[in-house]
Length: 160
Image 1 (cartoon, rainbow, N blue to C red):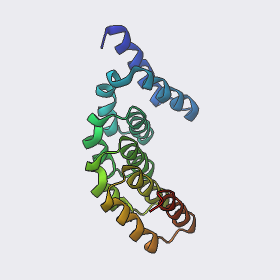
Image 2 (cartoon, helix red, strand yellow):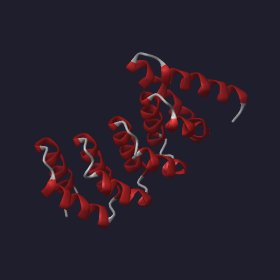
Image 3 (spheres, helix red, strand yellow):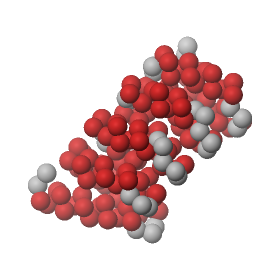
Image 4 (cartoon, rainbow, N blue to C red):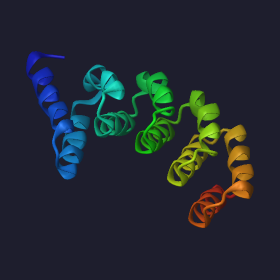
């Protein structure tokens, strides 16, 4: 990465710390234009003290389909903050990493309903038979009616 690109990515990453949610989202979308050059700068952010920064880093890595970030995103699925867990799960689904299947199956029982739903969506995007089976089983156990319906609709969309 050249110095100019590095500086631009660094400036956009500074935006992850901005108080305005829309500004942070804009910085995330703009980093994607730098492609894989941005990945090394994003990985350490998954361990930042601010959950909003971890969230945006996970989101950006998913938008980049950053296969190099799979192990880091798997770790982020254990984050204390539910927003970070669901964004890591969403990104793993976007990357379609087979490595993510066991972790996403585990997230089907996460305490946070939206995280469970995103984990199901990710598993179905990956299309691994074990993941599809996990979602089928999770539907039977799901307590949130909105998430249960979303899981059913996603599974039905596979035309199995």
